Image (tube, rainbow, N blue to C red; front, side, top):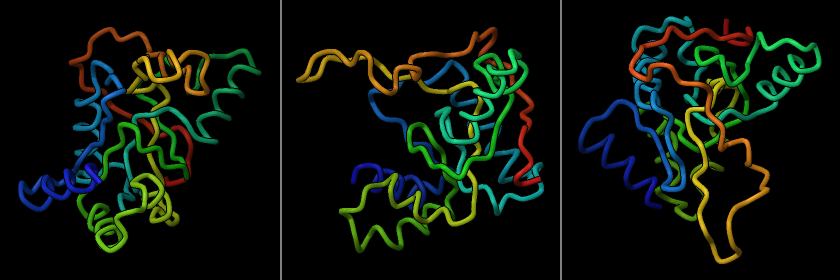
Length: 188
């Protein structure tokens, strides 16, 4: 619920055109906010990919069938030329919606809000994944978030499925604005 009300306040009261969700157990990369700012401008304001209506959200979490397959293919071919931790300017379009660190434009939020306000028991990520309908999430090849290890009731979060979320690419300068490229052609 806190996601929904927080986004509602940011979009309706403060008139933000774009919001990002970032949970307290995630650490953003050094360029996390610049990454979102640049891609919001390029995708939704300047429409540099010429199809902003097809882009549902901008993700920060490197996961989904396309990015995973490109990574595996590069490893099998023994080449690190596509979609690896070092490729901080490469993106893929995914049919998958990861909520962790993702940003959505205000019109997407209003789609979400129109349903959620009558069904507040529906989980944020789940409802957005349903609403996506033939639209894509831009996913970075190099993650913009990582999981913070913490102690829960079952001990430390070691050897979990999300272990690789603890990795970042090698950041040389977080303040450099990057020019992003989509390396698969689903929306081009």
